[in-house]
Length: 348
Image (tube, rainbow, N blue to C red):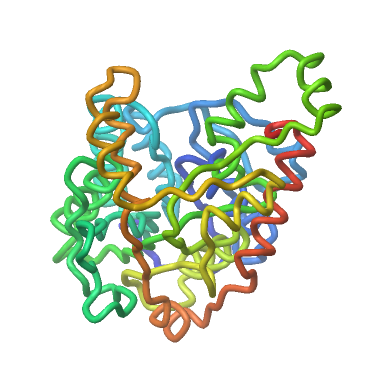
């Protein structure tokens, strides 16, 4: 039997090390005295040495490749599953996210990995219909709340289904499993929050001369949204919580992770220096129904659920049981994210 429940000299296998969550975790693991080696399985090439990472090695591979995942698990004391396809068709995302996750979970069992750490999402709870609250009496959702997902939002339903799959595979086994339901994430290397905005995508395709002309004229992009607020987690706060589970410093379980406060899209527009256009929540439902019928939008219209009703998680369990608390408020996280994205010329 390989399982030794080690807490030092660890080899940690990580799927999805190049994403918004993975980059910060790689840095945290590289600095940890308990970790001896980190193997990052990723489709995209990356150079750990160029990032100043001494213990990290890149292994080209995909979670759909059972042999690659099995090999990763065989060499790992702890397996961290971060890989997830966020944008794409329902068919493609389902294949990568659910078949790929099953490969990782099964490989952890087959190879007697000590600990499995899975990055899920608060979206697994699902958003309520307009006028209803997902949380009783408006209180933040605890980990005991049902994980149902939101029909019509593939990301939400796939996260919920992946958690059920994990429970079915591991219940009754001696594998130590920690699941983290995470809010939005941002920070200096977690740039999707701003880089994936349509305005940013258009900016990166705009010729340099036209960009200069826009700046000279003082043209500002506009961000249109409702007044719904969101929880936001700094990448380093997230990495600290994940590292606690990786090292086995606390009992396994399911934990909500989010920052200490909330932000709105108006706050994001202010941080970006953009104009903000308020949109009534009632208008989003009609827009969503229309957008879902457009081939160019299709399943992506499901993301508009987040603009129709809030979803707030209770993070007290993570604070008490992990000895963890978020250090960064939303305003500081947004400021760092915008500064980094603008320095890399990813946003106007």
